[in-house]
Amino acid sequence: MLLTISTTYVPADDLSYLLHKHPGKIQSVDISAGKAHIFYPEVSAQKCTAALLLDIDPVGLVRNAGPKGNDFALEQYVNDRPYVSSSFMSAAIAKAYSSALNGRCKDKPELVDVVMPFTVKLSVLPVKGGEGVLRSLFEPLGYQISAVQHPLDPVFPEWGYSRYFTVELSNRLTLQQLLSHLYVLIPVCDNDKHYWVNQEEVEKLLAKGKDWLETHPAKEMIVRRYLKNQRSLANQALGVLLSKDEVEEAVDNELTVEAAGNIEEPQLRIHELRLHAAKDELLLSGAKRVADLGCGEGKLIKLLLAEKQFEFVLGMDVSYRSLEIAKERLKLERMPERQLQRVELIQGSLTYRDKRLEGFDGAALVEVIEHLDEPRLAALEKSVFEYAKPGTVVITTPNAEYNVRFADYQEGKMRHNDHRFEWTRKEFESWSTDLAVKYSYNVIFKPVGDVDADVGALSQMAVFSRRDEAVGQSA
Image 1 (cartoon, rainbow, N blue to C red):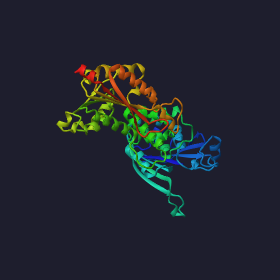
Image 2: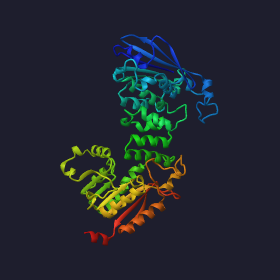
Image 3: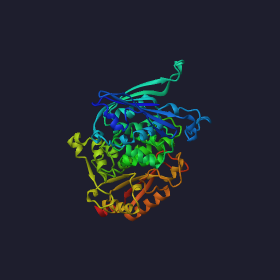
């Protein structure tokens, strides 16, 4: 396994100061299953190349609890780990180049923030998903990529190609940025790690990806692969990187795939089903002025604006960032004036009385209530049902009973680390019925998504409608 980093920055031998490794010496560091050797094949003022060569001991790999798959009994002895750039290379980068990875340069600290031209060569890099995955990881970060895919056996070309590539990456950036990209993305390409993934790995990922991961278009795949598809850890990391809307959709997409089993027909994502269900109920109610409470990034608003029945749509959320994304999603700056008069986005909290929410025919709270603890939920009840008093209120929330159908089900484990509760159908119906009695509404319940005969649907919905006498009293 060989990683080389070259630069033509002048003077190029400044690379040795950044890496804290003398160009005239061969140096070695111990890693878990062998050694990493650092040397310089090329050193001049015009070009400098640093090489990191891993020497993995196959026997030591087994002794140190290497790969533990279950595909076949000899996997711990017969595997590619000693011969490819994998998580071992990331561990070697962290140990051999720790100062550079953490943005420190003792002798020339001013170099840390200098953007330089770099070329990286990796051989051999396993990529699960092929060249398309490789490009989706590195190209959004500005890399030019040259990738040569190796055949399974040159003697038998009819066998096709392997998942192994020799890769060359070129970019202009700081060395710290380069190393952070390699540290995170090498094991993501491989979709495997040689060590136990735990809470510490979440912290490493967020630390190394703090300046670039949040805006990376493949961040969900990166997070899940880096954390070996451990949903609880991945959701925790995504909870930091994404807005509530994005996290809910990412989690829901994963749950829908798991729940679908071997079904081959494409299905609407559960998040989309909730939005369409809320829209349909508001249409049935005859509402003309509607509010999306906890609107997130404006996905429901976009659906509502497509319906001529809705003369005015208000979107409210506590997150300013989500509202900014909603503004872009809805293209408000380019919207025709007549259409623009039909929509308004406001920042606010549903736990306080807000006169801007009064006078609406309908309101929707899609996957909102489960994010509130008990005192704040009680405040939301008063804000919506006692003060705002929409004619129709549509509320959706996860059905906790359905969780047993998920592959990694654990008793008491919630779907999202920001959920304060997840209710069974009986609990949701009890809460909703009490609300309806207290505030003079009628309520009906409907499933959202396919219904399991034993545990119900993935999500549940309550549709509240104000009683005629209540409407008459407020008129």
